[in-house]
Amino acid sequence: MNSMTYKFNSLRSDILILAIILISGFKFASGIEGALDIGLYDESNYLYSGVKLTTLGFPEAQNAPLYAAWYYVISLFEPNRIKLYYLNYKLLTLLLPLFIYILCRRNRVSIHVALIISLFFLISPLNGYNWPKVSHFALIMVLTTFIIIGSTCSLFWASIFAPISALLVSYIRPEYFLTYVLSLLFFAFAITREFKRMQRLHLVCLIAEVLISILLLSILGLPLSGNRSNVAFGQHFSFHWVSWTGSQLNPWTNWQEIMSQNFGSAHTILEAFVNNPSVFLKHITYNLWTLVKDSINWAFPDIFAADQLSKRLGALYFIGICIAYFSNIRRNILKYRRLLILVGLFLLPGLVSAVFIHPRSHYLLLLWVLTGVLMATLIDTPAIEEKQMTQKQFIVLGLLIIALTPYFANKAAANRPNLETIRFIESLRIEEPVTVLEAEGGYHIYLGDNFRRVAEYDKNTGFNHFLSSRNINMIVLSNLLQKDTRFKDDAEWQHFLIEYSNLGYRDINIPNTDRKLMVRADLLRGK
Image (cartoon, rainbow, N blue to C red; front, side, top):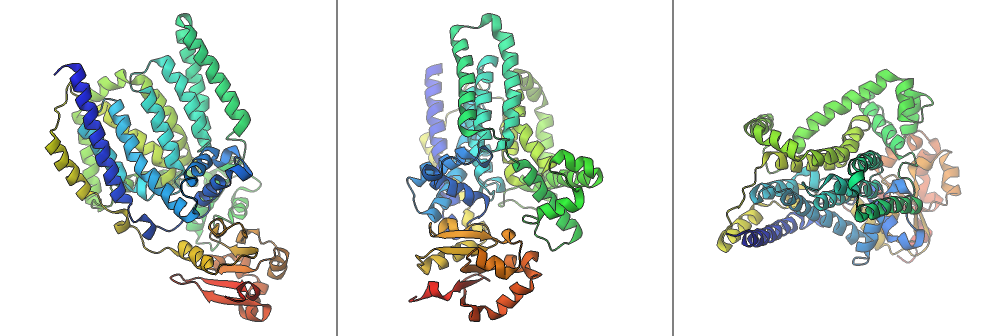
């Protein structure tokens, strides 16, 4: 078989495999609307930034402006915000294994190994169960970068693409601005190495690199300009502190109070360490232990047994593979050393976030996917020519993979209180301006522009003044709101819960939830 014929057959095989992964992905994500609740707060805020992009402009650099742009593009095809949320969830869940397969093949990983890795990540908890989806979008951009660079790209061309990609990714996940800075140093090293051999094209690329960076920074701003990382640290430390102490405080909305109790006037991560190093190190230790424990759990998709014996056997199997292919790994480390450096630059922010903030699954998504692809690249030794399957073999393989792919809906919980609440309020068809008090994080985003939210953490006065000053005419009465210390300890709030009907409010049970809706009676006239 000559080289051209082999490449054609290999490309045809890759296209067929991608079709198999795509169909399996559609099966995996089918029915997701019936099994997955709408996630409020972060993901819904990103969605709102996208659908309001032409009205409000790009959000701040630290709030994922490129992800907002992505939402805007797909909102052109799906204007309904509830359906848009699920469409985005499906798209990013489907696209991830496709890009993983393409990158594996770009790195000359054999077809069967690339297929196994992509299918593994398709059904992994790191994919379907991972929320918010902003990290998926960032990862897909990183995978695209490495697909362009390739495993054998020259030092100069690799260093050209890496900084721009890292800067773009930092407008999705701001912590990757660290990768941008480090890749600029890598770029400076490459320029020094290639200076005597630089051609006109190299000079043009160098100028373009500088101009693109200046343009992005001037239009979108500096990704690390806000206090997002300090807020993330404060909230996740508070989450740990509540679990240690058994406190009734909500760590996500009372984090400033908790931080003040433990770190005094600290406003940054460094100041927190200086003010109380012992508690800070306890937080770090807890993160490291959680990272190790959760990494083992994430390594096993739900279709596999999750008992301790299976996990240990899986770990031993992985160690055995590394020992068996040690010579391949050592040889490929030297061969792909530039690729290893670049991958390391993109892995660093996720690892830092896991250690200093918390090893949440969406922080580590990029870490584990890139590590998986990299290990396949180092271990696998692609043959010069792979044996091509016949059309009949491809059909049999495809049908088998599709049949074995689980449905996401079979594993996910059917409890969807946020979606049920949104749909119930929607069914009231209220056209007047509504100010809704709630603790879940953004029902108004899906209810129309006549709705606006007042958050429970905005309350810093007695309830009566808070109610009148904010013109609140709707309250979603949930367990989260009732347990909030700002309300639970307020006598005026307790009095309102008894006398609400005399104050002009009606209460309605929200179907299929444990929540009630308390509404001003004048909003329900004629309904």
